[in-house]
Length: 158
Image (cartoon, rainbow, N blue to C red):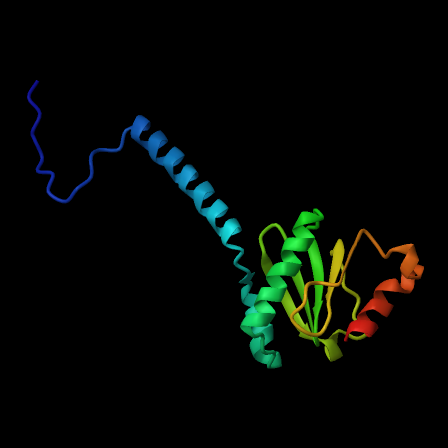
């Protein structure tokens, strides 16, 4: 049997099952390397919803604020938190900790009287560039006064 030879200028070799499997595994390896590099870099991402809220509400976050948010996310990650409420100066942020993604942002005056659901922790950052002051996980600490502790913490630091 005679097969016609096709020119190969600028084309890739034919796709075979073995080549497809090699590409898929190298793609998975690349994805895991990229994911690990992003975790190491400590970058905080903002969802489209969060960016929209920041623009619409006129909230300004400085480089110093982002560094403080990174520290708070690192602290929450070390405690095993998954969804956290960060209270930073006059701003409330809900953050997915494993993905290091800010889900939504609101000013403190908007946050007053708001019930935050689907969070497992809160990190309260005091005014100024120092480290986070408080982390609560799985409900308020009884030493802070029981069920109203989260409300008191928010009022104290805002």
